[in-house]
Amino acid sequence: MNVLFSFPGQGAQRPGMLQQLPDGDALLDEVSEVLAEDARLLDSAEALRHTRAVQLCILISGVAHARALERQGTVADITAGLSIGAYPAAVIAGALAFSDALRLVSLRGTLMENAWPQGYGLTAIVGFPQADLLPLLGDDCWLANVNSPQQLVIAGSDAAMARVGAAAKSLGAQRACRLAVSVPSHCELLAKPAQAQAQAFRDVTLHRPRCAFLSGSSARVLWQPQQIADDLAYNMARRVNWYDAMIAAEEREVRLAIEMPPGAVLTGLTRQSFSQGGEAIALEQSGPELAARLALRARN
View 1 (cartoon, helix red, strand yellow):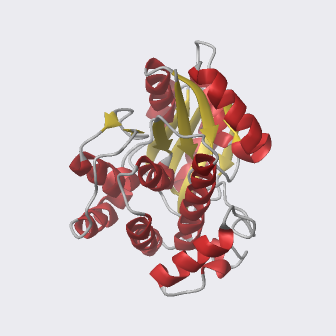
View 2 (cartoon, rainbow, N blue to C red):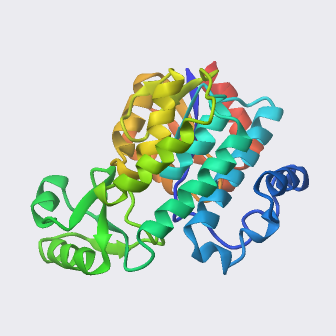
């Protein structure tokens, strides 16, 4: 049986999240050198108002915690990430060098923020079926994430999302909650930034991963470096299909999913996809010792 390392997307960030990383001093020194700036300032409350800093923090945190698990003997058979989480997933799978990931994510965050600097974002619609939501979207709002049958995310302007959220609630949705994401990710509004990101990948060498890399967009395992580069470059403009990705993980005999910090959102979503007795834990809550014990049990 297999172990999955999963990596969250934007919205999980919080101030101070880089201050107690495993092997944090050495890692943040490396990041500072690559980015030519003080990485220890990226997780301040002021910095996290900006998409670039948020995405870099999520990358750095995911890589730090996954590497620490690996040093203790807990390794992944499959990695997957939601949105920006795909970048640390690619690093830990061995497909993308950490230094290249830092440069690419720095560009990614800048491109996304500059494309729609204000008045746009994401809203979660909870407890409302996809079939009923789609007719409400119109031509100025998009279905961005299918996290589970009962948790969908829409993208668009604040006004468009408010309109759709109110309509969904009037028809029985439990909640319409604006997320802490300041860009309209995973829809055609980011098509041009995605093309610019793809251009940057032409200067980067990717490798065949040492473990399976599962796309959170297509819900397919990708092995070819060019396929992974395409997935990473364009995932900002493609719908997230996390629910289907976790079903695909279970079909590949994943029986333990370990979510890297920050947060535990993916853990709850993954549990909704597993139907064969698999476990999902958030490393931030469970700790590395329990993760190691459960990984050993999953493989026996």
